[in-house]
Amino acid sequence: MPVEEFVAGWISGALGLVLGHPFDTVKVRLQTQTTYRGIVDCMVKIYRHESLLGFFKGMSFPIASIAVVNSVLFGVYSNTLLLLTATSHQERRAQPPSYTHIFLAGCTGGFLQAYCLAPFDLIKVRLQNQTEPVAQPGSPPPQYQGPMHCAASIFREEGYRGLFRGAWALMLRDTPTVGIYFITYEGLCRQYTPEGQNPSSATVLVAGGFAGIASWVAATPLDVIKSRMQMDGLRRRVYQGVLDCMMSSVRQEGLGVFFRGVTINSARAFPVNAVTFLSYEYLLRWWG
Ligand SMILES: CN(C)C(=N)NCCC[C@H](N)C(=O)O
Image (cartoon, rainbow, N blue to C red; front, side, top):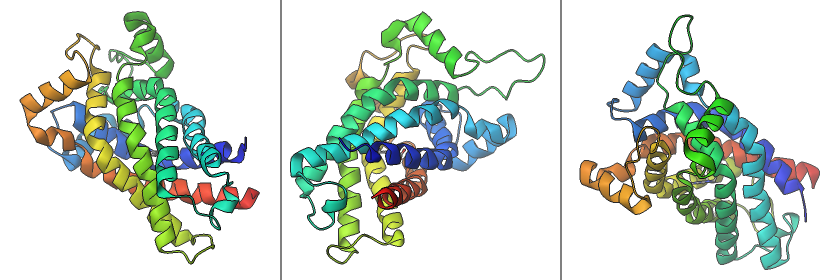
């Protein structure tokens, strides 16, 4: 099994993650709290109340976990394509796989990465939702004092299964949308690259950016539900399951609830995935 894809997935994911985390914090707040009037209001309040560091809350764990999550995503995608089409990454420009194979490989990668991502994403969302300013002497400590404390508290209060709260919504979100992610990327690269050649850096940046936007627009409805399920159980259980969370969110806030955070999700998705695909492609060419 070729391992370069796993390593390239890890490095490229880490670069994209640092770039996108501030957008991600704003998105999670908008999806789960009703105190903000919009993106700008949320950014101003985070900055005033929590300083610049507020935007980077909950980042240390995703950075540590990206090694597992993104290498599983890209490694499983590429190795599933190898199983389906018997072509390696280097051979795929000369013998391009069909879109059905790309979609199936993407869905497989998305499904397996969601399982690895679930506990890390839960801890990130819980930490991002703490609105206390960064600790000052004499001020009461926030409920979670860091990622390990958060993980231990969830385990103590909600058990092992508590660490997988929201995992079903995450799998439903990621399985089809990661298929869409790779199809969009490959489709755009093929469109703007002469047959048999590698795509140029500009093509990779644009195709990666739009792959991010297309997949995140499709993912946003379940992303909202996932974030709410992850915050559920913090004080008391509100939702019985994914469907119940969908129904009661629509009942209370209308259909527009499914598009909460779609603008910030897309603004984040372009640079994150442009950088992720560019570094992934170049690392593989460099090692190839
Ligand atoms: C819509 N979804 C779930 C995706 N496209 N997932 C693939 C990876 C995305 C990248 N790490 C990011 O955080 O944007």
